[in-house]
Image (tube, rainbow, N blue to C red; front, side, top):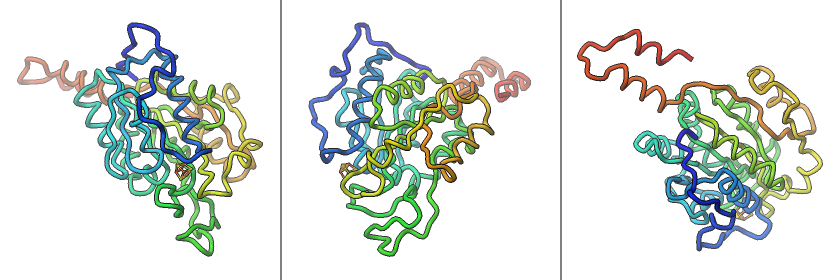
Length: 293
Ligand code: SF4
């Protein structure tokens, strides 16, 4: 994140815990994500007085309550535009967005391409359990074909959305996947996302053992494969090929799929201000230069 405000003293992961205890079910994958987030904040030296955690609605979207930063528990599917407004108004803050697959890829799906193409300086953590857990088990946009839920008693007849594939196509400048059972690896991905200047999305395999009996930790553990260092993350076509391999292979690649440097929305706004400063007749060539990627 561009405004990486660092704490004046090193803080331990437990110092990022709030006084509110997580209300998730025992065994929920979201505990692993929360733990990795504490670790990442500690290792990055994040100043919690200059950090905001923004969420939508869903089991995972309760996460701002459990972290000792400022928080915004918003409307269903509206975490990204809320965070965009916050980051634009207060570029000095580190803004982290978190939510579930239903929140982000169903009702909120229309926001992702625009936040990605604007390259807003945010870290977006998707806790992907392929089910609506809070409302007790309905099919979600990332549920597998044939998945039986209360709303799909004969099995889902829809192909799932893959958050990583979509994010690469939409032009996100940092795209990764983590696994909530691998805390150190996930914490490292979150730190990389924090240091990335621009929009960083991390899709996290985070099982819901209560309502999704197919996609459990035991199911994923033998499938997860680390890809760090195995390909050039600057190659968008390779990243896309890797992302799409989840449809044809029995593995779930985790790590950084894609990364590129590009001006963030905040950079471009600042450059526009500089280009126009004190002049009624702005230098258009300077303004156009701002938009060169
Ligand atoms: Fe986690 Fe599922 Fe329980 Fe929600 S219902 S808290 S996703 S285990």
